[in-house]
Image 1 (tube, rainbow, N blue to C red):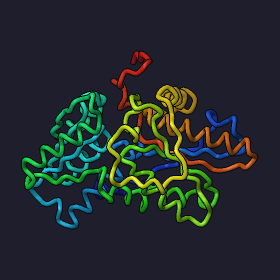
Image 2: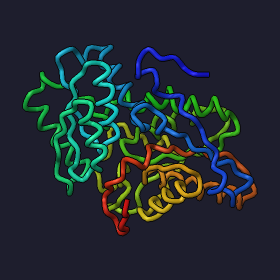
Image 3: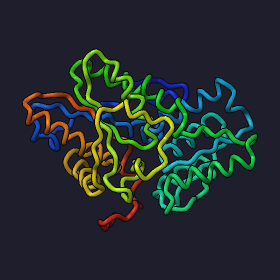
Image 4: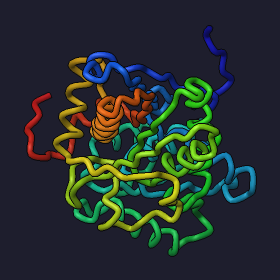
Length: 310
């Protein structure tokens, strides 16, 4: 049935679950499902957190008319801020590392967002430092949601993403897989799934190396750890190499018709490893992995070991 919406804000959430067939054919006793977060209006999982942070701040008076929203982002949250800022009449200014893919910067600017570029060698941590300096110089001008510290980030997933997964799969769900960036998706979903009556193993995905090409994911040991990060919200961590995330993204496009980003490739690679473990143990199971965004945001990607010709 077609949904009738009064605002683009109402299009956030209720994203579909897709079962993998070809890529997961070698684990026939385990269901592997992908939560397609690119179906959000801004094209990524970050729509949920950005909208929740903005609406909560408007409700409690932190975001008032005349203030400019400012935050650091590797791209997807910035696109979401920009989209909802345009819809709500809120000016947006973003700090992004210079090496963030060009499509993300272009999309944010298309909504009228002011983009400030930070040192690419300092990554997301450098962008955070730039934002803090800007806000300190003129604190009354800005609303700084600080996605890495804002509890509305993880609450969007506690109240939304995890509830949707449980409504669709219920007690069949045995494993949940998500990457750590701001850590909001895993913190929120992990806490909610940890309260479920049946045990769900929660698997966090991180890059295997400090210098990596999995844009949006954090190598926590060498990064500023987000204040909202809760290590108790997941049961174990899987370290995924950049090549494995990129190769899986390619496989999903060729074999499943899913053109996804490289962090999503890493999540799916980890989910298949989990499914293989369950298959070998003769346990069966039901695994859900988060697909964060579409691959069209990486047409001008960070150049890793490979050379892509688009």
